[in-house]
Length: 440
Image (tube, rainbow, N blue to C red; front, side, top):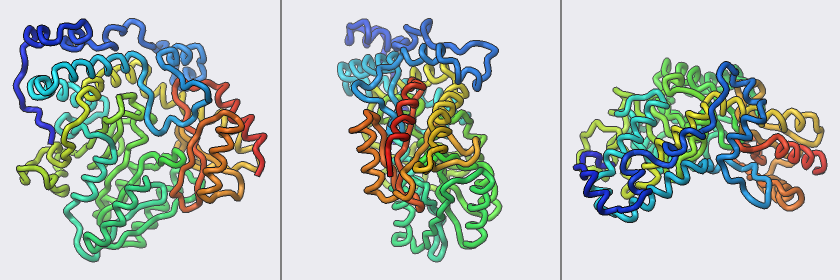
């Protein structure tokens, strides 16, 4: 548990100890983003997100805040999100501050910076600050939820799906040995609409009346499929099934509030689409639901009601936490709805062309609501892991396009394409040109 109940250090003493202009800027709560606020990208008033998605002059201004990968067209931005330059500057200033002040800062001043980051993250997410704890990543959050879930008994069943993150599926299956339950895995259609996805889960619920817990992914890591989380969760709740929601890829890729989803527990990454430094995630637990998730066994007070007591990260990257408010500020300056629309537009640029090619198979959502800025494809009839790896290597070696192979779908492996807000239409045109030239 992160200890946020520590004393505060006077500004005069800290200034005397740090003695640099950068440190002074961070001390007074004005990071690089605050200093550069006049030049932040502002969306035109009165323009819809869908119209703005096609305004190349605006997105060129947004792109000017980022340093592009050199030597290749990088279409693999699903691993983590690149910090815009002002956020990177804020992070580097914070890193200098932490390194200079060391444990003196951590034990005296970090608590206020941490609370500020939590409060602003909760506000953007639509949660209360006491429902959120910052973690190192979504994986840490999900591990705590799955392994500390305390309402299983021998003979119960748990549900996972092929679109879930591979290590999370392994965790769910591990409950068979550790808790004496049955793990049921759902294989979703290769292409599906929101209605078809809801029907698939509802059928799985009805076919497995002993289900007690399920893992539900908001946006799949393999192909950017959006699942109708709110509707699936409502059906699960009617049957007494608890839901752990994986939002690792969705926050910032989609524009939403946690209350829109109706889930009790969720895990997030801030270092993907929010643009925070690497090593920042979050765990959400709605008020009144914490008793089903045991306190982390490393905690002293095993009766604690705090969300923070459900994870025990040890020493964390203090500088990354300090930079979170600036990352949230930049995200808000661009606008969550604007980012969602732009990324979907970029995805459509290559997807629509790819679907006309007889040798290319496009995976993921079959209707607009089921698609995001992420997408995937493969060569027709080539769905093994080795096929996907070979296709990724061909794109890189022969066409100068970087992507990533993704695995775990019941339907087979694929290559994922993930643009970012600074990706240009020309980048996607190069991908389409490559797809036309690649042969099965």
